Image 1 (cartoon, rainbow over the protein chains, first blue to last red):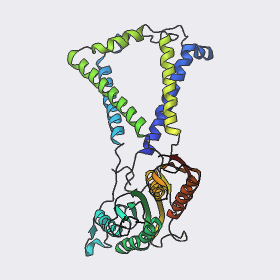
Image 2: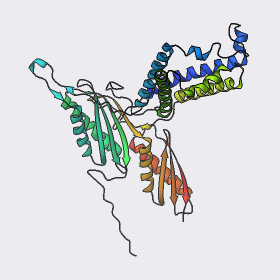
Image 3: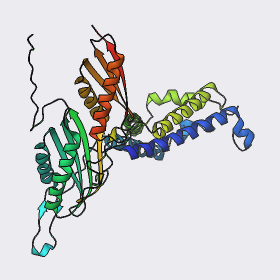
Image 4: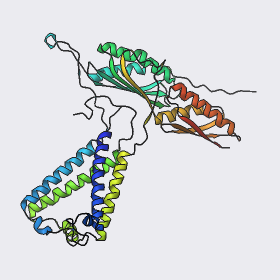
Length: 206
Length: 193
């Protein structure tokens, strides 16, 4: 249900991986002298890494400003990347159901529709609990549901009820077909809200 | 702004690589804080902090063929390969696909539909149905994207027949649940007095 920063993470890991690998290989080539053999303009392996004096290079006030800005940028990027790891629901905003604003506006909280879907799913036999989330727009709604079912429930029966009753009801309420629906099933040992099975025990006496 | 602009994403996905991302994010943040600290110290006291003197002296006397440079280069290359592997090795799916009930037709009032069951849910479902088989004392299960493995304990001495029965029952239940493709079911049965 919640969305993760998978694409962002992969992209930045590839970029940083290529940069670090290229840097490491360049350092190794320079250290072995291969870089100098390939191009005489490059420093030989016996030469010092730093040609200038660090003390004078870091003397001017402008260098301090550059270090400060670089630090702020690096820190901000790191913090944003860390914050991006928090899984987010990204629900829809209010749906605007009106056609012509001049004759009045009709707004509907997507969470209200989600609650209605949850209540309807919870009445199905074998369902322990559910959560529903609407994304997209009123014209192109996306419905994502997480349905927790009892471990002895008939899963296909529950799915059939959702497809035959719950989704058409939401579609009727919004007066548009749903663009996309997703159902994530979880299984629990807890008793379902309705239609629960009763465990009985007995002793056979010979 | 939301990450996906309020659009639905696939429920069945591969790992999001949160751990390497968190480690790198923390390192970037630490480097940023260290740089800001050094710059502020320079602005306040007029000189760079003392902790930078060590690295500065080390760098000043360094030649390219120094063992330290070799070590830094090798470490950077290894870290680069690890980062690329973390990004490119696909990882396992978090869930298994289910087919829609009925004859596979789409719901008339909905477009694309994705139905998934998480690996944990498949394992719980398989273990619960395994425990309903006569002769099973207790059962637990683990599920991957393609296989379900059952660990069964029984009071029976002969476990071969029970293993076959348990696998058949669980496979039938997973097929009945609509898993598509149906994962391969294996079982280890342990006899326990």
